[in-house]
Image (cartoon, rainbow, N blue to C red; front, side, top):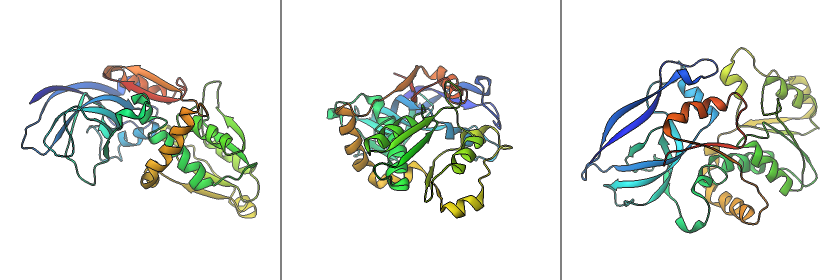
Length: 295
């Protein structure tokens, strides 16, 4: 089987803020055969995330290669007994119309339960990496107690929007911040937050978007104050909590069904609009989870 596959690639290394001119849409022929052991997926929804910029820099080995993305797709053809044509899957695919992958324990991919009743897009937002990051960062890293104060930076972004709601459900007093009337996060905000934290405060750090685009401006915490206040800062990845993904989603899914968590998704249409959608993450133009719908 052969299909025409369009994909988004970078024209060159991107060291500062991205622009649409940094990208181009290319075309190739993707080939699948019954004896390949591969699965051919038609991509339906792509997750657009700030961290992907780090893979476009000179220091990244993936420059001009496929830009990986957590995504949802439908199996078109399968040479693996694990998948069949028509299966809807979620996992690491790419900024392209079609993705070929060979199933293995090292490949993050799984079938979605079509009977869940949730929109497909929810599986890459509230029930995907955004939800896993917000839930794991809050409850596994910060471990808030009822009545504690929680500050959420970039509170209108895909993770912050959920973390604030989760903290409210935990009985916390929540303050959210967006740098402009739209959104922002930066080194100055981190410094201000640390200077005003209570003793034994905990910080869950999952992104530093201001440093993605401007490495010359980095947060410089007052280390002496951190010592006196016994403040803990822990960086983490969403994938740190992958073994608990199903457990998290069971809780989050119930909250969504009960109307306790509101889901906001900012959806663009078409592969050709992936570059514009990505750039919006760095200009404060989107609210909630940024997604591109391909089909």
